[in-house]
Length: 215
Image 1 (cartoon, rainbow, N blue to C red):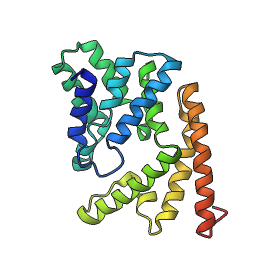
Image 2: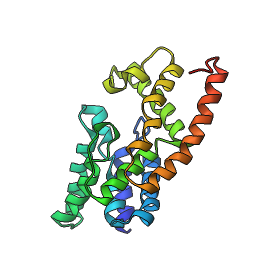
Image 3: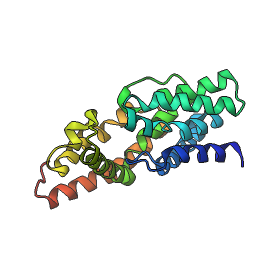
């Protein structure tokens, strides 16, 4: 088994049972997006693939303990890569990508690979898959609070409102449609605009069907 598949298997063992939308499907899509963007923007493909595969490996720990899954992921990734025989400079390059990937932390990536990973992670919140992930994640977080009492405080204004459709509309206003202006690369911006077309059509239909065409 080569390094990439060993890494994929390692990450899958951590994300088994992941209750929101940071599952292996997300990981594999982000990896594919990174490689698509890299063809135009450059960067080291090995650093990029490893960072993409490992960027959310700490998300279950965040669910269980709180804190920042980007930091957890960077720590886990660094240890994994050290055991795999990589040197300090390479490990730090991968860890830096992971630490700066997270949408809600507003951190600035300072390498080509980090900029591409941050973009790819954000792009997976757009388009048809972005709609699916948003609805799936909102439902999972509502159920998590119902069954365990765990409250993801940063999501209160969208996830825990009485009317989930109202919460979804609020989420759409503050996150997906603000993504293009925050992207780092021209390739990513083109992909984003195509994906947002799908989201606009969906929202228009949703609000028409629910009697709120002016939302």
